Length: 354
Image (cartoon, rainbow, N blue to C red; front, side, top):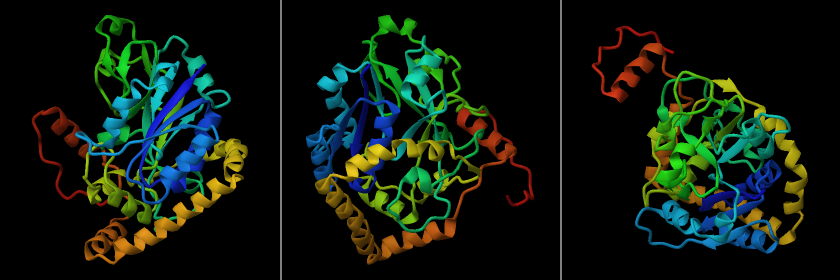
């Protein structure tokens, strides 16, 4: 069984070894990685990993009409790795697929619902837990505080990533779900969510976020680390969005995702299983040196940003914001009605602080 992960990267060399080792252990047999405009040596690391037989690396230089990620996914649609894959999933380097079934591998997930040809798996968003500075150790071991298992807002915290059977139903991969379906095949599509529930046609035809108010993680989840430390998030904002050219992240992105209410050790507990693969990658002298260069770049580039008053102000705002709180029941109801375009009533006055 060939299982393909597709990703796009820019200036993420410090995180590549851990992400690749974990997903290789998980059961991905192939990796198709696109890089653009790297100044930390990520592209050189990928070149070395390709020479070692770990992945296929394709430079993805602009300009792009719709941003580097969408341009890469268009190219990926016809790549031999995609064409030859049995299952495909698009993941970012800050996303770790985590499976709770059996031995915790992709084969265990597929065996749990063998009739499914798609698994629409919800993000579980991990906040930064107050971490200020970058540390060179695995993200899943460092960040273990996450959003509540059941919550109603923001909807972006419930977005899906799809592991789908590459059986000809879909014409090309997409960021959250495959795209360009064959209309004659849609009636045969059977997608399930992260708790194994069969999903309605709205998911098959375009929906990108899970239902609110339920636990979507019984079988599997995508642990999403969109922030990292505050230093990491400043560098991420400097890098810009992968699917919108030249648009930076801002404090609203940070506030919506810095959710740390519950401990989630499901990935941290399994992560040592990939230790031998991490060691194999780090044992290569060339790759190890490139990793250290990427680590050093993070300190150098952050110092450059802090010399600019605009970036110092942005960093100070993160320090002031701290962890975000989930909305309470009344607030969630208000936002849900607003989202659906329903009549609104004022929130009760004199609301106690969270």
